[in-house]
Amino acid sequence: MSSQQPERGSASQVFQPLAGDDPTTIAGYRLAAKLGAGGMGKVYLSYTPGGRPVAIKVIRPEFGEDPEFRRRFAQEVQSAQRVQGLFTAPVIDADTEGAQPWLATAYVPGPSLADAVVAHGALPAEAVLLLIAGMAKALHVIHGAGIVHRDLKPSNVLLAADGPRVIDFGIAYAADATSLTGSGVTIGTPSFMAPEQAAGRKVTPATDIFALGQVAAYASTGSPAFGEGTSHGVLYRIVHEEPDLSAVPERLVELVTRCLAKDPGARPSISEIIELCRTANAETVLRRPEDWLPGSVAADITVRAAAPAPVQTPPPPASAPPAAYSPTTPVAPATPPPGYGPPVPPPHAQPAQHAQPTQHAQTHGPYRTPAQAQTQAQAQAQAQAQAQARAYAPAQFPTHAQPYPGHLMPQAPQPAKRKGSRGAVIAIAAALVVGIAGGATIYSLLKDEGKQAQNDNSAQGNGTSGGSPQGEESGNGGTETSGKPSAKPEPKPVDYKGINLTAGYHLTLGDDDVRPRDGEDGEYELSYDTGGYLDAESMDGNLVLLDPGQEGSLAACRADTRFTKNIYVNRLSKGRQVCVTTGSGHMGLVTVQGFSSEDSPSTYMTLDLTVWRNAVNTGSGS
Image 1 (cartoon, rainbow, N blue to C red):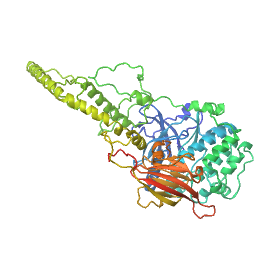
Image 2: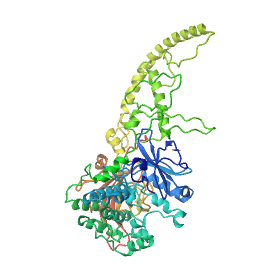
Image 3: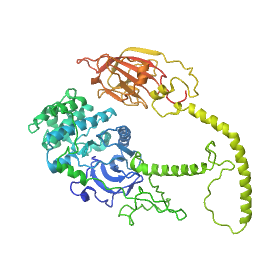
Image 4: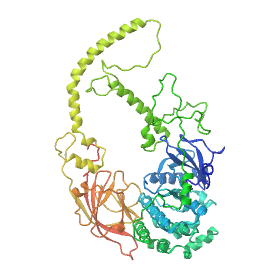
């Protein structure tokens, strides 16, 4: 499914009006226009509560009815939400359990590579080098999240003003699991498949490298490297014949040829691809100017720029005072445009309360669903009311929902009563006199207690920090939150020599007998991914590659903050050391001792491992 593929032409063609069979809302997102459709569903334009445009991809009902698709789709969405790269369209929201699964990605104003080539012809070599370098960096973070794209093709690459964006990573994997793929529904484009895909063999990150070479050939010539025609004919040529690179510019031939190697092991790594792009660019730094695309292609970006989200603020309650003017408050049009009005709820439903997003959410805040924005607005209103109430109390008073005696709470206007009003006034005055006297007494009693609590809170400042486990450890300096010296001794190192960690296996540092166990993707503490990298997948886990000659130790691993989630093994050599921090509070030091030989039936690395258990303050208070 192509996520943001409108038709070429004017803005009216890019943002197509909703048809009778299109929904008007998806889980609180108001749909403003249709962007396109593909083999897996339809794509719509919507907005976050802060006004940022998003692309909502609604999966076809046939796929949603397949339980295996749902299982894999949920897994891929969870992995895709971890992908945060400069050259990817991030997944910001999703529903994998609803009647029709959907996911929302950031909207990218720009044509796809496929549309740009069809409309304007092949790109110049300089633009292709920048395109491939950006796509390689996108694949680096995608593979780092444990995802193989499987469907990397020109229609899944968007051309933005500041570089390309790779979209739809991992969705083809979910589609492959359904019975639809065996009954005439084609997922993926044969012209951009790898030989192992066409032959039904195992798919690895090297599969995406082959597709990257095909994209480079297409972008520079305007034609697929293995020609066009029937699917069977194209797939046969991909498996058995060499590509036609006669029209590829000479500067790109080496890059394309190496990527299109039939043997996955012979294809270049991500870092090698970026180096090939740099070398082909006269060995200068690959810089991406604002005009990296031809002018005709850049003009399509302007056409696809989404208009600001329409204001959808409901009228204020009749009893509420008029809102104060703010220069940052958008002015609602007198008559909302067609299609933007609030949906009519069914007779049995309660009217929805639409909260206006704050200025921070509009400009700087993270993406939030409409439901989350409403909850946040209610919480902010409650907090403001409590803050106003506390303004009447002494500063040392702790915060409570109910006021102390003598604490004057602002009261909402009440309707006037004709009878008993004088008696009520006398009663209120008497209560105030008693309350003020009681408040003075409580203020005197709690004054010292408030100071003591303030001192205690100051002593606990480091313990409540939201930083990383390493930051908390170094910030506390070996002391407990109470300020007293910690009685907890330094952890003792435990050594494990000569571990052969096979690709596709993982290590758990908390095990008494640390040994490789099968599995590379499941929140493991340290795994050797078949994509060719060490991976720290556990929550709050990370890796640090120490510099050559830097002595590895517990102190060095605690102090170094050059965190990453994965390290490609082609950057490792004998003697290099990697610090490992797990989400369960353990630390480890990996020392590389070697790698499997070329004639070995398995791929593995030999390492020594030193483990310090419970060496990190996890914030659990233990």
